[in-house]
Image (cartoon, rainbow, N blue to C red):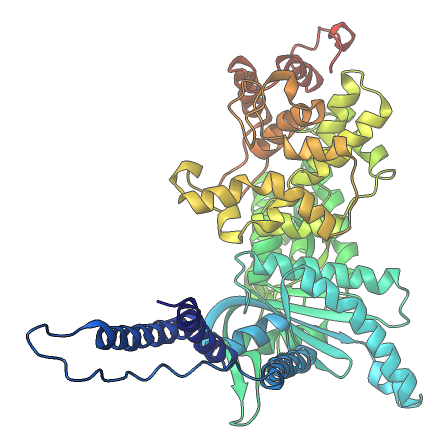
Length: 600
């Protein structure tokens, strides 16, 4: 076959494939058409060849029948090729323009789902948040519209990144208010926790940016109907349902600067947040005063209980609407003073009153609603059985001196259900580095590396972060995603713009290596592992065991320290650092840290 004909046969189907792909056909269809084109051309070429060479010898040849030569293939003119390229560029430009317009009116993730045809109308467990400025509409009526719009734009520009960081879907702006969902359309098991953290950060940002307004926030959690909802010509991805209405009502009733949550959100987040039950008929100040008096009485009752004090405590509980606790104190009062007529009358009053003040009447709700106020995150680093004073002191000092990306780390921890893990690991790592005599610069590096040791989990899907089975039971691809979080840390740190030293990065990348060489990702052994990584491995193990997780109850400090001892015996942890850690935590306290050999 001549070279020109062979090249022609190869080029034609490729041109067919390129044209089909250009006009929107998928790659499989394009190449299938190309294959059919090539088969047809080959068949035609072979037929012509057979026509040229085949002749029956028994039949005399009278005259040679000339076979017409194939017409030469003329390449498309240059201006036609340029026209196709220009058309492709115009189509791509139009696509980008449409996507940009969509992104200004809806979440980019939702826009992509709509373009791909993957949006479904469905019922889903999720959390909804409403936020609104207090009295802003009235105050803005006397001001120039340009100034009002500029202020609102600045405000929302500050709030939107917070919602995005905690995986919230910004549903819509409503004047000076906004609505957001967590858990839809982005799947998120810890949607209530994400919403609570976002609300807290929004209020903190309102204060730190010194906005001249106050914001109210209401949050509820439950089953929502989500999807594209609207008319036949215009739809919006949103949520509807009883919980949406309740979140809006709570926002309207909430005091300026406050965050009110329903009982479902409370159940999901109370482990990590300071909260206060909202009482009907009592202001926040009155509630605080009653709670302070009750706390004082409880301390006194613990020392020397009397019937009178029990009755006073029961009355305070009744004022708060806490019927169960009020009945408990009344019973104690009767046990201490069986002839007390006032106690019996108070008990009867409590039973008749019930939990009148413990629930709020909400417009549109037939039943009264349990509501809590979100006050802030609980302090996870405090002196107690789990963390000795040395560790707490080191954390309090270094947390003021070392800058950490707290919001990013909180988002990762919330997805895993392990709030406070970074702080505890940082405190334990820095305290151990100081205990064994490393210099101050290394102690600071240990603090930062301990805080950031799990930052690579930002690249791990949430369903794998909360997986409660054995790692070996996962499919190979999922197992690789989990194991690669240590090496993914470098890219994550670059993405969130957190620069770290080579020593800190080595500590993060190697903290899952084992002293005996059985760890990952590189199966380093002994002193091949950086000293920061060896420190973090011990600190992280202890904190993981003594902290609550969705898949594991917290161990006692004694049980966790015993497990650290077993890791030392199995040579998974550095023996020198492991023994020092046990002594720092109160085990074998008679031995002195100054007797330790130098750590390298």
